[in-house]
Image 1 (cartoon, one colour):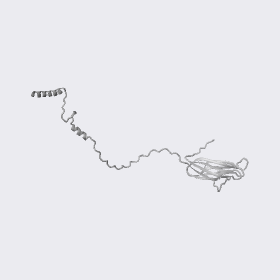
Image 2 (tube, helix red, strand yellow):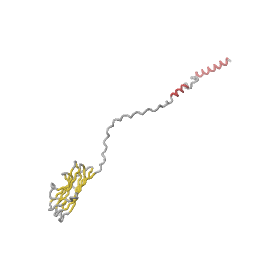
Image 3 (cartoon, one colour):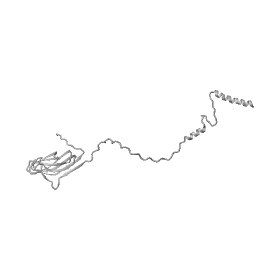
Image 4 (cartoon, helix red, strand yellow):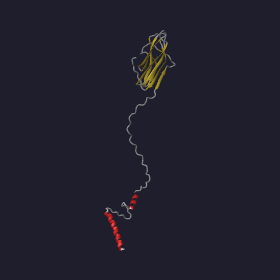
Length: 217
């Protein structure tokens, strides 16, 4: 019996020696895995990596102070022109006729007027003319203050070649730098009796811009 145990011991020792002689050695102890780690230590390390429980939500912080205003932006393009307005004056029905005496531009009689505030305007004026018994040359002017905007001439009379009644019209586009009196003034050149005007009116339309250019037709 003793020789068998000895032979068995020699066999195990020879096997170990053969493995060492082959260039590698394997030694496993109870409780270790092939990677050489302790199973209990791995389990403990895994347990510590679990996500911790989330605590309660904290209180909301107060609102911060308002920031400093930024610089002003660039100026935008000009908008479209606004709606226009108009001013009109008509003859007074209680005094429909105005006699036009002989004279010149310095003595011309006022037949219609209106006050316009500063601005740009297209102005239209008209009036009817009825002649006297003789022929006469009636000259009427449209004025802004003392500046002539337009002029109209009509030869009227109760004789052959003349008209007994007619109509005169004037117009202009102008810009007024300040409040200005717009007028129609008329005078007669020649003739023996005074013609008269009626249904005189001035219509002024306020616009965005206005100017009159004089040209030779």
